Amino acid sequence: MRVIEVQAPGLLTTVQDLGREGFGPLGVSPSGAADAVALRIGNRLVGNAEHAAGLEITLLGGGFAFPDGAVLSLTGSDFGPTLDERRVESWTAVEAKPGQALQVGPTRSGARCYLCVQGGIVVKDFLGSASTHLLSGLGGYDGRALRKGDVLKIGAASSRTGIPACSSSSSNPSGALLGRRVAPKVLQWLAPRKVLRVTPGPQCYWFSEEAQRVFYASTYRVAEESNRMGIRLQGAAIQAPASGEMISEGVALGAIQVPEGGLPIVLFVEQQTTGGYSKIANVISADFHSLGQLRPRDEIRFERVEWETARALLKEQEELLASAELIVE
Amino acid sequence: MVTAAGGGARFQFASDQSLLIYFDQQEKEGRAPQNQITLQANEKVRKLLRLLQLEPVAAVRNLHPAYCSLLVKFDALRLRHEQLEAILRQYLARLEEVKLAEPRHVEIPVCYGGEFGPDLAEVCVMHGMTAAQTIELHASVEYLVYFLGFVPGFAYLGELPEELVTPRLATPRKKLPAGSVGIAGNQTGVYPFATPGGWRLIGRTPVKIFRADREGLSLLSIGDRVRFTPISPERFAELERACA
Image 1: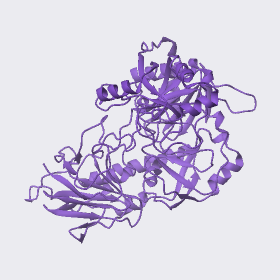
Image 2: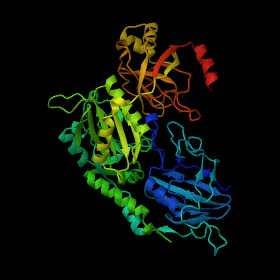
Image 3: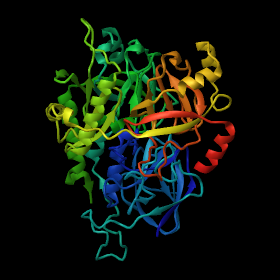
Image 4: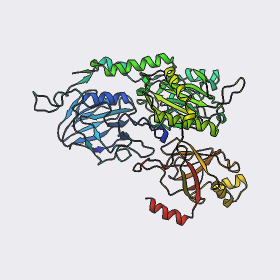
């Protein structure tokens, strides 16, 4: 079995897939890749099912060796990846020869990049997913961020994806995959946004007109203490409704809650499943992957869109991800 | 995007892929409807949850029950809010026929005070009671699991005896020990993991609240009845060894 050896884990590297949806009644949030679009495309590039597990690498990068070689892709933000000190392209299927080592980071653009390998990363499944949930120490590789010396198993290449794992004309069994890259116009469409589109939150009518005006007019800065649970914002405080009126209720991914201090928090992939703060707005699903690329000190704004627009943008994104033009052979 | 429905339910768009259903909201003139925690509203939540688990709706991805509301997450490319609302109204019309599972009665041993419950002394001062009185009160009631939320396996238990109703900490702890038993407002609960938390800690249980290797995973389920049993530090140590 092929493996990945962790030579340097970087700041925070975890095993992630598309998460475990459906366990809200147990208080278990889905977790999964912070930029799910990047993980899905990364998997497509190396011939995996979209939901296969890869590595989510945060801000500073890391070092990973492939003693038996691998076909891999790096998607998401540009972490300046090199294989044995030779620059490799992001958003492209590339080969690591046996014994080669990959160095990534620090980032040159957003917060996260994804390392996908043909066959996916294999860890013990928890509730149907390989995703790491850091706060509870569940899922992923031993429920934790990777450490130096960890050895990750690579699965067998899938034969169900419609992409030939074996090229008849090549002695390289993965030859058909190499050089596949993502169409530039797709990358342009999916480029992470700093103006995040939102729909009104369930308690939006509890906020005063002035509070709403401040929220939509202000530029917010991403705070250092942001993580996979929540993205904390600094900037103009919003007058929050009196907390006494709020009773804990289920919260959606991307919910923007306003605690007493008035600084909004965007609930993210490792979110609590229920919460007791009023929500002024909710980031639309088509912009979730942009949240995953926000770095501390990034400046963002919120733009209100209609429900129909949110749906149309999601539809457009999904059609793009499913289209034959996504990947250039 | 708010609509009232029969059976005391109100629908509210929560996000582009989720819908909230509130039960038994209190209408006040000139104000937004107010939620209130009642056994009746929570029973409706549990019944709708059960019906949706027995007869799942295609394109519904997740359910987040709470005191008096249920958040339904769905695939917006297969279902619209309005369509989901129409389907859920049919479910609501059948709530009365839903039989909830017989509640399980679960006992949780707790070592109160000292290093196990660092806020017990302060709670006693706030209510003018001795430690023994506070412990006796907390252990005197059978609590209902209103729902699990926050983190995996965290059960919102209610209601506390009135004499024990206590505000949460002004500044939440950054990290507390797994198994910590806290009180906040008229609620009590056990923290399954070493997480941040703002409830006042009066004790700790050696019992594992959430285990990935256990059938059902969570010690407690929505609708269960829970009673706390005071134990000594020696018994805590014994049970901790047995639970490890």
